[in-house]
Length: 148
Image 1 (spheres, one colour):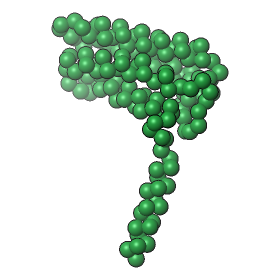
Image 2 (tube, one colour):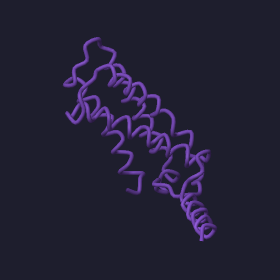
Image 3 (cartoon, rainbow, N blue to C red):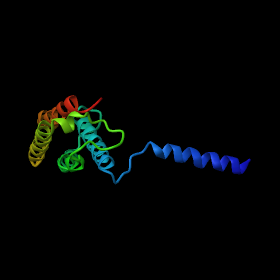
Image 4 (tube, one colour):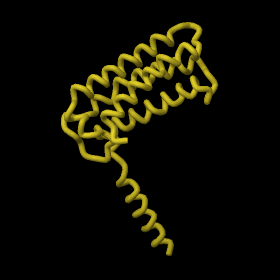
């Protein structure tokens, strides 16, 4: 009975691992970056919307991290669609110029957000508009190039 349980456990764990992307693949790399971007922006947005206490230093650190992450995923989009369960529409590859344009825009607005956070006395009210601009840049790309 114990051997049977161990065999079933190993089979179950193996099947569960089949759904995961290779973390070293381009798909796995960009998914990891996008997850980090989401986590970082959700924390920052939470501070501005009152779900979390506002911490200016932490917000500024998040802005720098978000800007670094905003420059990172694009290198992990190969010239041709890759294998795996991706949320990217085929348009990413069919309309690469537009996709690149939206990527550069995100990099630009996250850079501006970092600039605003360099002020000594950060006030959440002054950060709302530049953070909304970053979120709008994400949403614009998702609407055109993401399946959900």
